[in-house]
Length: 203
Image 1 (cartoon, helix red, strand yellow):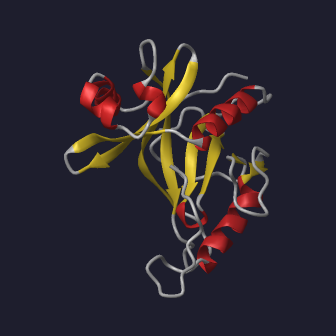
Image 2 (cartoon, helix red, strand yellow):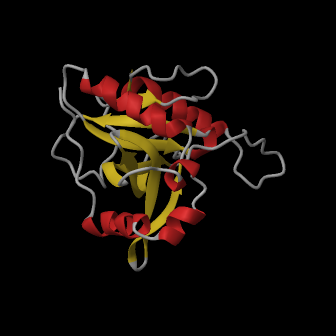
Image 3 (spheres, helix red, strand yellow):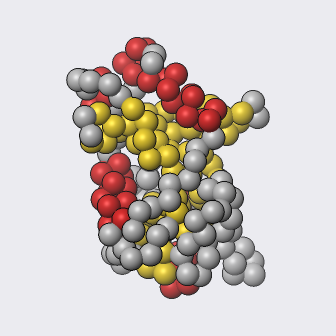
């Protein structure tokens, strides 16, 4: 079934187009694929990026929107991604990046398109676990910038996934989210002298 990709805020898209049109921004980006691309670069597949907050005292999980991510395509394939963020003055371009999560997101989206049920795709990040998932929301008409994971939604961990969690295997929110919330609750707060920070973080 086709995915119902949410519409990104026009100002967020405009900041990415401005950055792509700036030789300086592209040249200074840590993305060799953009600097060497032959052909026009276009932002596609806008996905809202939500972050899973640390476990609440009552055990519930909450999320918050942190930005919109656009995959930068050239000649029909994704070379990199562009991140935007919401500031006090509105939407602003954050940075370009490339790496395993770009390809993993594309793969997860193709897998979701092959499912029988249509979904609204989003991204859900779990910073404490250095984990990124494709969040498949069942409410197709929902505002991509709001809402929380429903029990019937699916979460698809992207590769590389944390130990013990299979990448690219869909999990019902009701099954996976409590596990993630529990792990996050047990993870020491960053900056603590006892914190052991995993190597690498989802871009």
